[in-house]
Figure 1 (tube, rainbow, N blue to C red):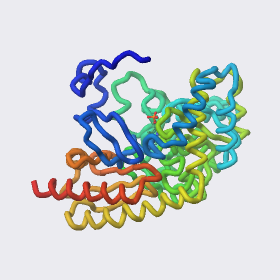
Figure 2 (figure 1 turned 180 degrees about the horizontal axis):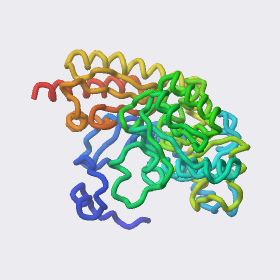
Figure 3 (figure 1 turned 180 degrees about the vertical axis):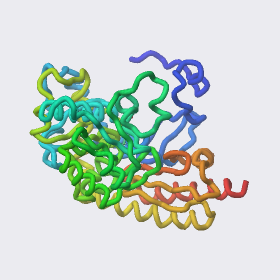
Figure 4 (figure 1 turned 135 degrees about the horizontal axis):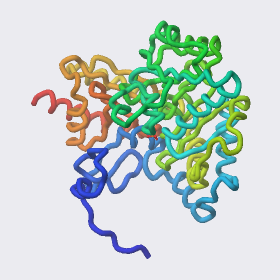
Length: 406
Ligand SMILES: *Cc1c(COP(=O)(O)O)cnc(C)c1O
């Protein structure tokens, strides 16, 4: 029997948690599918999906079964040994993608950290120590470690932590000429999100991603796609690169992969993977049996035509209604994104006010996200019911009606 719980409330956050976040006024305690309940018993519709993580919603029975079954067998064994869930998950990811090999870790930032280190090590081994420059896009987001904030194109996240990692250049996204001007034989990697997520759900243009691939080939640079947010079915293909037919050398994924259990993965080819030999990189928890057992179940369910087609169909259902709402209240200039990664771009009159939409939605018992100050982001469960979509959109419309009348 566990000890009785100490009563806690939102106000405790301000006393005992390091203030890196400013969470909502309510405390969620339970979820089922695309509904969440808070401490007071209020029921919310979840269009936030734990920031594009809860791919199968809350408390999915297959995930609970996978987790509890594995919990009765083996939680952790370290990478001095391998384990069955990690081997099965790697085999399935390799079978489903361009990759030959997987490296498991615990988060998106760690997956990117691994990718950037691997790209540098590969260039160092194959071409020499002068080839270490990394090019990434302005406004990109790659995580919060010192290397990943430095590669990320937002100085608000990387300034003020002392000397940055050297050799990183930022270019405007979707600007092939700028990339062409920046790339050189010193470039070891170009890192791009196929859809820029955190900074506003901005999709990469076909010609841009194709051109980036071409430029990397010409300069012996690796193309890294950060699919931490876009991967594992979020966009209606298993990975967003599949929409474009542009294959990266290294791909990173996290968020939806664990469906709520922390896991990250870096996928790459045999040739590149060989440069991470024993001891060059590592992790204590990466490939943890619990995480891999859950992720295997998420992958099994998501990587089916039913679920992936369902994501595309749900996109259309969201988009039609969001366009209607945008027009009726004059709040959106554009609804963009793919699959269930949707950005409602605020019109000029509402620019900078994504936070007000987030707060107004919460008052109507709806969870949404921001993606920068100008975009309201929706990233619900990939299997959200039509009834929940409609109910959530009704609540969203009521929130916007109230907001625009105020
Ligand atoms: C969320 C995100 C990350 C960071 O993932 P963490 O799990 O928070 O470390 C990196 N890249 C992209 C594109 C993301 O959306």
